[in-house]
Length: 190
Image (cartoon, rainbow, N blue to C red; front, side, top):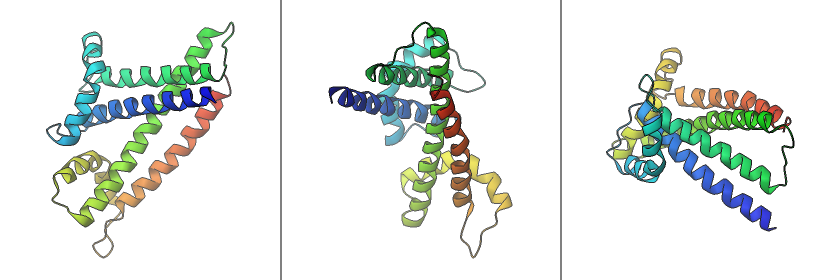
């Protein structure tokens, strides 16, 4: 029972930090402005890990690698702690186990990024129906526009109804299926 509580707390805390780090990474990658309540919250919650990481890890082609690697490290540590709480022991193959944990953490970051995109799409669509001029609408539009723009060239509006967000959500769901299978296969190696 205590191990389950500890596992829940580790998963919750790590997921919170990882999602915030990924949001910060995606905000910067997609050039979403940070001068808004959401951006300020993300920056305030992640500065403690991003600033020290940036001293060691430079950016690459405009990508904030320090933030992404911090998210990867936090997710990998959370996976290790979860397995340790379940009584897992790597035995004599610690190097292979660390490699598998790193690969699973990488897949988790891809999955979480897909979840962030789906969340942004849903919020952006709802805000376009409710209040398209809300200050947060620009944030979610900036997050989804690079992904929706190519689809809007292929999927025309039907009776002034834009179906491209729905198509993108289906494509993201399709992407999540092989990621889940690959993660399960890697988990079987532990």
